[in-house]
Image (cartoon, rainbow, N blue to C red; front, side):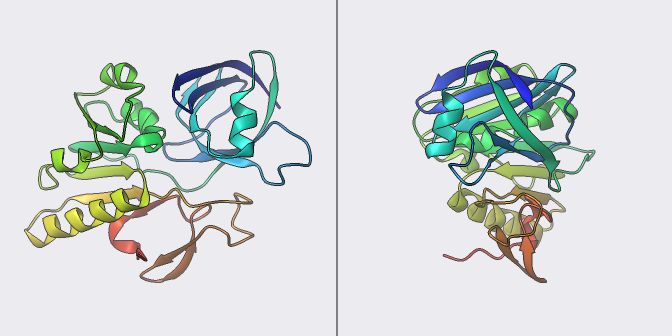
Length: 234
């Protein structure tokens, strides 16, 4: 159990949750959170937004009953954390771009801290949030409101590009990465998938991902995959 330190509303349906305790985790990993009894049945997977000496932070979007309950938490309330789970982003060297779309910016904040000097690109469909916090950690920050942030990224310019966002954005990033490689670039593109999850440990197969080498699990084998490994289905 962890105690809520703060649970701040940042934008319409978007909250920044901070909980106390000795919690670790790597870039791109996630925790399963639960602040209720038997119902809803499943805990909610949330990417690690930041790890501090006194706790861990999450950025989440209210999309159902579970996250609506999380949004109602107040300082002093308790929440159950399981994790950290998953295979996250690698600790790389060279020139790095961090590209997030909407709530997909959540895991990239910790990446910006662990990979100082990264260029950060944040895209939002309507309202931007957490941009000032990112600007303090980024070598450069580009923000787009309108859903075309990938157009601002030169995929030939970077050694590594980390991307997290909605399905169409990830598919487009994969295509841009492939085009860059075909043009002679050695850019490695990593995608953090936002698949639905149930158990968090790879036992239930809910988060199955189609890959070049067969079916894999987003929660255990991912959620981070090399872009060329993933097969996207329309």
